[in-house]
Structures are given as C-alpha cells and as structure tokens.
Length: 193
Image (cartoon, rainbow, N blue to C red; front, side, top):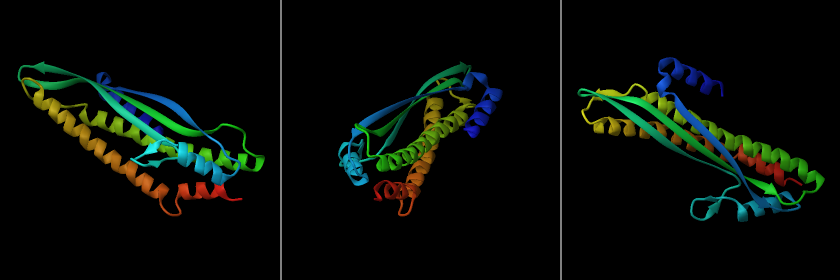
C-alpha cells in the first residue's frame, strides 16, 4: 500500500491532469456447507467460481481496466492530455450457510483469512499494474497530426505493462499453489481432524 501511495504522490507532482486512477472493489460470496474440512472442500469444488473450462476455484479475484483517454493536438504534435483509468476488482469467497462445529469453526476462520490474504495480493498486483501503466504513458507525445500513431503507441505501452504484471500474477500463483506452498498449508490446516 505504501508503494501505491508513493507512486500516486510522484504522479501528482509530475502532472496532476494525468493522475486519474480510480479503483472500485466489490466482494461476492457463494454458499457452502459441511461438518468437516473435507466436506467444506467438496462443497467449494462443487460451488466455487469457475477456473478455466472445467475446474472450480475456492476463491477468485477478477479485475478489468477501462481507460478514458484525451489527446491534445498542436500543429503536427500530439500529446496525451489525460488518461483516466478505472480498475474494477471483484473478489469472490466461500461463505458458510450454517455454523460449523466449534472445532471446525476456528480452522475455517483461519483458512478463510489465509484465502483472503492470497486474493487481496492479486488485487494489489492489479493496482500496481494500473499505476505502472498510467505512469508509463503519462508523458506520451510525438509527431502525429491525427494522434492515430500516438493511440497505437499508447496501446502498445499498456499491453506491455499488462503482460509484465500478468506474468507476476502467474508467478505468485505458481509459488502459492505449488507443492508445500501457502495454499497447501491452508488446505492441510482446514482438513486435519
């Protein structure tokens, strides 16, 4: 969070007109039930959000970015006047439909806290991605009478930043979901009897 604030302050110092990054966050839940950790996992496997074509996830972070871009033409030069980004993040978590037995309830709360921490890291990486993309295009200017080539340059820069951060998202998941990773530990904690 501190890094985001520093990046935003640097952006405001450089060009206040270009600092339009807005984030909206929504949390959804899906219902699960069970009296054991295994039963809760089975319920998540049946009811969790889709992950690919056939698989389901325990929890999920979805995000999308929209841009509102305005160009300023002056003679044969085109420069970015403003670029406002809107990042929409949706977290989806399991929710118990009825109270779990007391022993399971403690494990469930610890499990869900770990899952939330994992998903919120995906959200943080998405925020970093949008700020990095925004900063990367903030001084875009070139000779371009109609701003068409400038828009293409803008798109290439944004795509390159997105690719870099999508690789970071995948790397984070590889570590977290790998054998002995944090997700393995969370699953073991939930299902131990």
